[in-house]
Amino acid sequence: MYLDKLSYQALNLKDINDLIEPISALGRVYIKRIKPYTCGDEIAITKQYGIIGKLMQTLKNRYDFWESARNSLLHIDPIYQVVQRAGNLKTLEIYEIFEIKNFLYFSANLRKLLLDNNLDSIQQIPNLDELFLFLDKDGQRSPAFHLSNLYSKEYAEIKAKISNLKNSLNFKMQNLIESAKQELEIDEINDKIVVSRYNKELNSLLQNSKNFSLESENFANNTYRLRKNESILQIEQELDLLNYELAIEEKKVRVEITKVISVYEDDLYKALDEVASFDVSLVKADFGNKYNCSIPEITKNRKFDLQQAVNLPIFLDLKKNGMLFQKLDFSFSNNINVLTGANMGGKTTILKLLGQFAYLAAYAIPLPCEKATVPLFDFIYFSGLQSNRMDLSSFGSEIVAVDEALQKQGFGLYLFDEFARGTNPQEGEAFSTAILKTFEKKNAICFSATHFTLPSTLKSATHYRIKGLRVDEINGLKSKTTLEARLQELHRYMDYSLEKVEAGAEPPRSAMMIAAFLGVDIEIINCAKNLMKEGK
Image 1 (spheres, rainbow, N blue to C red):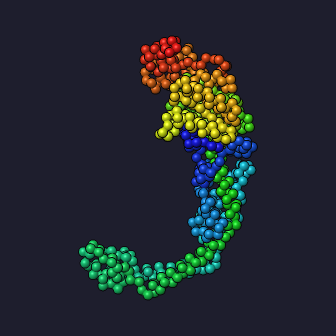
Image 2: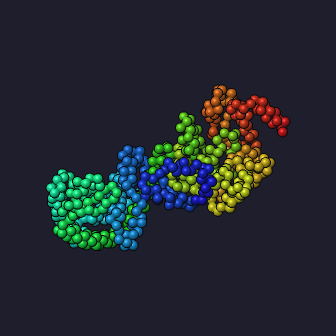
Image 3: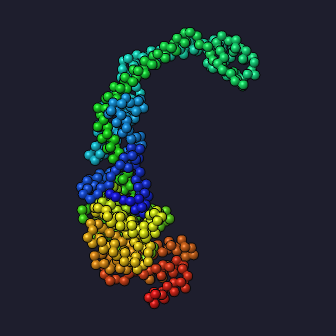
C-alpha cells in the first residue's frame, strides 16, 4: 500500500505506531519488513486478524500470559546473520554460539507457552530441542554457553594440563613472594612494587634484592618487578605452548559445532520469523485490548461501516486534558462523499479517522471502535498539508500533489481536507468540484471535507454534514473568562456526529455563533451578518 510521507504525517500515524512497539529487538527489526495487505488479500488478512483476536481473548483470560511472553521476548535478538554464517559454514565464535543457544532457550519457552494455552496452531515455532541439547552438553538447562570438555577428548586433556600447570605456577609464585617478604621484612607484597624516588631506604633494599629487579623509572617513581626463577619461566613457556594448542583445538570444536548448527539453518530461520511474528501479533493484541478495539470484517466491497469509532491520537490528547471524545457512527459505500460543517466542527478529525482505520486495517491492527466493516486499499492519499517545495504556492503544491495522486493505479482512498482553499473562492470551488467529478468513473473512494457549496450539489456525491451547534445550544453556553475555558465549554456542546443530507439542503451556518461565543468583537460579527444579508 502506497502512502506518501506527508499523508503519513497528516494522519498522525506515527502517534499510533508508537503505541504498538514490539517487545524484542527481533520484533522491532521484523516489523519494519512487514508489507501491508492490499486489495485481493482479504482471505489472508482475515486469517491474520483471527490470530490477533485469539491473542486478545487469551490476554483477557490469562493475566500471566503477557508477562510470561514478555519475559522471554525481552531476551531475544535478531540473529539472522549468525544463522547465515553457520549456514555458510563460517566458523562461529563462542559469543555467536551463545546467541544461538540463548535464542533456542527462550524460543522454546515461548513454544511451550503457546502449547500450554492451545495457541500452537496460530504460531508454529519449530521444535529445536535436539539442537539445544547438543549445545547444552553439561545439562545446565540455561541460555548460557561454554565450551564443554565433553565436545572433545583432546580439548579436555589440554585444559587439564593447563589447570595443573597453573596450580604449580601459583604455588611457586607464592613461595617466591613469601621469600621476598622475609627478605624485605614487608607484610604485604605483589609481583610489582612502585616506590617514590625519595624513599631511599626502600629503593636501596630493592636494588640489592635477589628477588626484585628495576623495571622502569621516571622523575617521581621507580618500578620494581619480581624476578622469576628458571622453574617459573619454564612453566610459563609450557603454558604459552599449551594455550596455543588449546586455541587450535577450540577452533576445531567450534568448526564441528558450526557444522551441526548449519543442519538446522532452515528451522532456525523459520523459528526467528515465527517468534518475531508472534511478538508483533502480541503487541497488536495488547493494543487492541488497551484501547477497546475490535477485529473488523474485511469486505471486498467499497463499504465503510464504523460504530463507536474514535480518532485515537485526539482521543488520547483529550483524555489528558480531562475531556471526552465523542465516538462516531457512520456508514458509506458511495465512491464520492462530501462532508460539510462549521470550522472546529470535526471535519478534519473524521477524515483522519478514516485514513487511520484504512491504514490500521492494512497492517491487521485492531481498530479503535466497537464494530467495523472496512475494505482494503492499494493506497491512501490525504490532501491538507503543504509540501516543502519552495517554488510553488500552497495551492500550486496542493494541485500538483493531487494530480500526481490521481495517476496512481489500484483501489485508492482519497481524503481531501478543504481542497483548493489556497486560491480565490470562485476558482477554488470550481477546482474542488472538478476533482470530485473525476471519481465518477474512478476505482476509488473519495471523501472530501469542504466549505464550498457546489461540491455537495453533485448528483453522484453523497452529502454528509456534522450536526454541530444549534441556536438553542449556543444560548445555553456559559460565559467563560479564558479562551481555554470557552473552548472546553464549546467542545461539550458540539455534536460531532454525521448525518446524511438530502439534495438541496441548506449548508450549515454556525460560524457567527462560534465567533460570538469565543469572544469576537460584537461589531465585527454584526458587520459580517449585515454583509451576508446584503449578499456582499
